[in-house]
Each structure stands twice: as structure tokens, then as C-alpha cells.
Image (cartoon, rainbow, N blue to C red; front, side, top):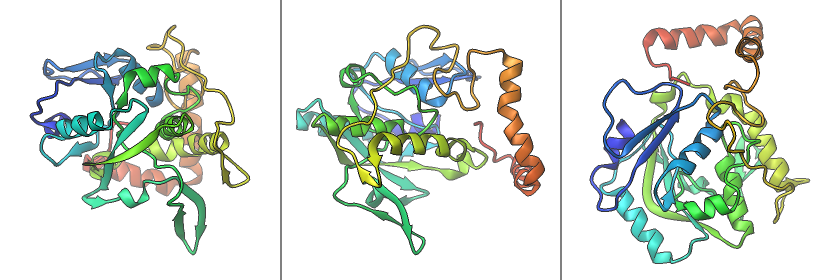
Length: 277
């Protein structure tokens, strides 16, 4: 509820649609809607976008929050002033109170002297971007081959290729790492989703102006029940027992080969700072 509270009072009407496996054990506000599903994160976001009643949509993580007053009013007014439905209006990213918006451009994955380089002339990537729901749906939504992360960067690149633009607003979104200390979401999905993203938008180290492959959209059939495409550790369409074995076996192997990694995780659990994912 911290995200909801941080939004505060705004003149613009809004609703929060949350998709996940565990229903809240408290009464939700009238404009807060929960949809139960155990599918992968990228698909959960697709479900939320398809089920919202708003004309504009944006995605959040539950470890994010605003620290400015009336953030949605400010985003909405800025979006309207552009009068262009082919834009994504991005928040500026803060991590533990430090402004990270200088890293908003497409980042070169080659490191020199331990420093990750950034091409300022490359496309801007969004963080919690506000965009037209009609634009999202007309472009096929999220590609089902993404498991959890970087689907938003892929969508932004598709908008750039369409002649659109990602614009940085003056609204900051903060990520509190303490709320996701036990989460492996980014780490475990990075290998697959980063490789997928790079294969779609780069070749021989150079950025492509057009996507290398067509978008594969999610199907409506059983979208709430089974993850489509690569599923990561989330629910698929197979037998639950087999899927649990497939999911947990790599973790068991890592526990045998790198026991200190799981000792640290156990310590975090004991301290009560482990995340839900």
C-alpha cells in the first residue's frame, strides 16, 4: 500500500490494478483492484493493462513510490500538453534517494575499466512510463517471450521505430531496495530477457532501427491460468509437480555448488527482510 499512499490526492481519476498470486488480507480502496494469477510478471502486466478502464496506463513495481505531491496530475498535464498519442512519458528514476536519470538512454553493454558506457544519442528508455492504452493494444502489447523484465524497453524501442518518442517528465519514482532485499527477480530473469532484448534490437554491437523479429502477443485463452512463452519459475501449462521440479532443480544445484549464497539468503529470511518474489 506504500505506492498507493505515495500517490496521494490527485484531481485526475485513477485506478490501481494489481495482479499476483496472493490476495491482500485487508480491505482495498474503491479504486484498487486485485486480479489473482500465478503467471510470470510480464504476463501479469499485460493482464493489468487489458483489464484497466483508463485511457492511459503505466506500470509500477510494488517496491516503488512517489515523494512529490500530486504526481499523477503532473504527469497527466504534461502528457496532454504534447498532444501526441505516440509518446511514452517516463518518470525519472531514483534509487534509494539518488537520481539515476542520467542513465536513461540505451546503455552500451560493453564496459571499459569497469564503467558501463552510455550513448547519449541512443533512444531514451522509460521507467514507469505513461502511455495511451490504445497505443499499447494496437501495437500488440507485451511480447510473450519476455519473462519479467525489459519488456518495457522493447515496447519503447517499438514506439521509437514507429516514429514516436520517450520523454522524461519532472516526476521522480523511487525504488526502495530494502523492500526487495530477498528478491531474485531481476537477477534470475536478466540472462534470458537481456539476451532476448539485445537480439531483437542490436546486431554486431550496433543498434537496429527496426525490430529483428515480429512481436508475439499473448493469447486471450487461459491468460490468467498459464504463462505463455518462456515461463521462468512461474506457472505454466504443464503438471504442477513437474513444473516445480523443473523450477527448483537449478536452485538445488546452485545450493550444492554455492552454499554460501543460500546461507546469506537464509540470514535475510531470519531478519525478516526477504521479498515476496
